[in-house]
Image 1: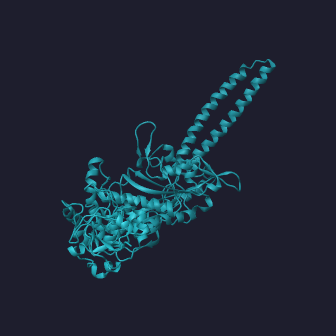
Image 2: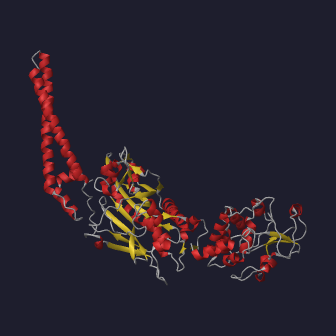
Length: 626
């Protein structure tokens, strides 16, 4: 809300400032209403003073013993007239408040001139749009193969809704978690969980009511709750009716919430896909700052939102919105737009605004200025950091592959369980793998998996499918992550302590409950691990071989714990079946001269060679007994 003193003292100047937006302030009507308010206020003040004087005269008259009846009658008449004027004044003030509540914020002088989005000024770009060697599909065509279902959402809720399942639901959740972690860890925000239902006063405080009531979803019942259109509403209202100490500023909040909008003015726009939805999710950034630092904070906040796209490797640009395109509550706004290959243009994914005192005046959010000792209005800022659904759209379109799969951006790999850092949802290959796994025992070697695991192009996708297969069999542990880890470290020498660290992070437990983590990782990565090392003993005390199962021609022997612990004066090799991610082992009777014999290049198959009986039984873990 604009400063009422400014409206009274410089109404023509306010009208000229609002005209930059294309907003026409009816100066004559406003001036007439303000003049009427003044007259009624003056008359009410006069009558109130006269009534008070009459009441004093009544007391004096009674003290003298005189007849006070005429004075009492006059007092009653004055009281009646005053009540009428006060009612008139209240009605006039309500009209003025309604008029003032409908006035947008005054723009900062740096906002470029212009009537609509065509006059927005591009400030910078980051990243080059990808050049596809095939015709890129839009996110709907890509997503429908991976778990994006608009038809199901239509049956449940109607148009402008979507259902996400499987890997897309996880990718959507991963985007949320990634954004929150980035803003909290790297940008200094405090995460907030806030209500999704708010009262009208909260929406009035941030400027959505009364002007934009048609864009909101109101819940029937008492009290009249509204579904939030953005987390800006509840988060900014955290400072409502508060006086903050100077040392508490700036306040920086990050919140993930669903957002609900009726899109009343968007009929016919973006009807296909997830670009414009009634329900969507967003990570919102809000800052509450001192007035003298708000425009520096705006630049900072915009940079924080852009950092999300930088980390995801998505091309984007930053625009300064022109006067006619700036939002109602904002004094200045930057839009961030992300590149969508299917549309061959940039689309908005974040809007970052400085509202100056506009929202704070509505909320009575203040800080105590140490120089004056008096409360003053704070400045509030907000921005998307960023819209999750549109980020998902951008990832699907920019990272799509010719076969219909989608590469997961490296920044999201940790949030996808580490098993999807290659390709997400190659439908054809997934079906092939499920057919391949169907009916096999857990410990049965799967040569095709081995061949792909050691192939750096495809191993991650196969690992993900293998994980799905194991979970379907009730094992409940992401075994594929080991295959991923092994392939990533295949060409590196990993020392015992590192092996133990890896095993601790990616431990697998066999059906008998024995830990096979070190053997498993070592077998798949063709590493050499000293089972007698202190690190191994610390990680798996008293369990050096785990469950053994003989394969090949080396025969079978039971582990001899006493001999292993006390030393037998010779070396033994533990042969690990390299095909199966659940490595099976047997004690080989032949002595091994040195570990070099085990790790010689001649013992390793080519990178794309399928598993053979010889490679299946080659020693890849050495146990030294002294």
